[in-house]
Image (cartoon, rainbow, N blue to C red; front, side, top):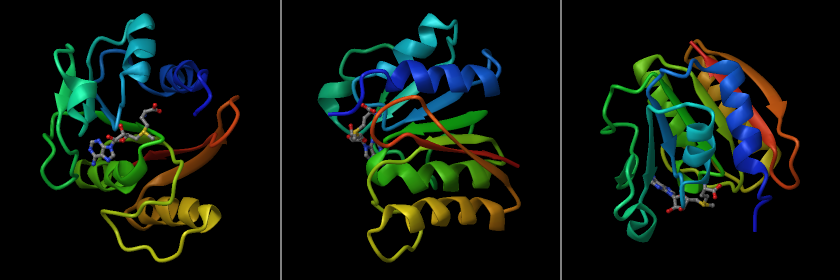
Length: 157
Ligand SMILES: C[S@@+](CC[C@H](N)C(=O)[O-])C[C@H]1O[C@@H](n2cnc3c(N)ncnc32)[C@H](O)[C@@H]1O
């Protein structure tokens, strides 16, 4: 069970880095906690992707489906991922493809879009940042004031 404060903490970080009118893809949004936190902060242009049908069903702003960096629509001006499991590296790859910023709070080591061997968290964080840096991104690291997986990568082209 993740820290329930993670959505507000992540939303506050997004507020400090992304303009409210930006089209944001909330990748692997689960039950929509981050989208709701952003809505409370007047962010009305957020789409939350999740591959679990029960999370997406009937909810406004939800995109039910598998977020794949190669096929996801290109209109997003920023892509974010909170504990996005195997969608984590798709966030970085999508950002690089469309030259938009990303903000990522990784949790589990679940490589999917880019090759990575091993299962250690520290090398995983470095790997995600390296993909972006090799692609010409400036990457900074910070942390959310939450328990558990709290580290965040912010990448800008
Ligand atoms: C650990 S949960 C976190 C959900 C939410 N971000 C949170 O913090 O509560 C990971 C979620 O990622 C979704 N997911 C994983 N890979 C995905 C992908 N490629 N596209 C869409 N959803 C994905 C799963 O269905 C699951 O709901």
